[in-house]
Image (tube, rainbow, N blue to C red):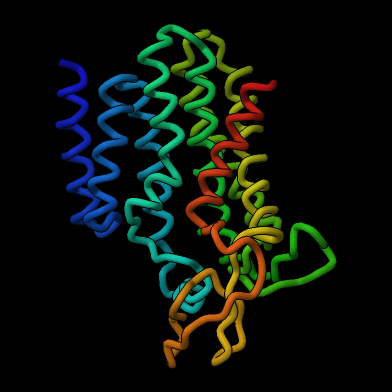
Length: 264
């Protein structure tokens, strides 16, 4: 019965997100599957964490659009998430909800679930708010090197603080609903894991994520095969592992957050 109710609830949320243009058709289907697992198996406590991530990240992606419009050409995809983005951001959290079905009443499944969402929320907040900073970001592998806003691997004080806040928001509810009944230890652990997960995302972006180059506007971009500049030029491979897309980097971000939470 709970799984069926989770399915209905997930459909409603996915349809609303589709109408709000936060998800495309494939993204709505993916969100329905993930939501069914999380709502249906975990219950309303798990659902609240998922909704905290989804609502806050979707809202931030739509805020200050005019100030971000020139940066869209940098990113692999727009603010309307497809199935791969949904999987990259929420797939690991859904996996821990499934594990919770087989291992109920265990703290580690809750910590893994919470850390995965805290990490992707931290990363999203850093991206959406970090690009609004007045100062130029610096490459995480060389803090003396200034880079353009939106560059993969770029970090800033504003973005890092936003990342910390995004992780702390999810961690707050993780602490409140923790099976252990202890708020502060869980809150501190999940905040820490989420922040490190987002920083790991930046490290991958600076080193091994697939990055392309647009010969028309002479800029680096995650987009391939076509850039969004005025000429819609085909981009060329520039650096990184070709198979390591931004969606996979997001999945790795969540995974690193989980590893930190379960190790500590």
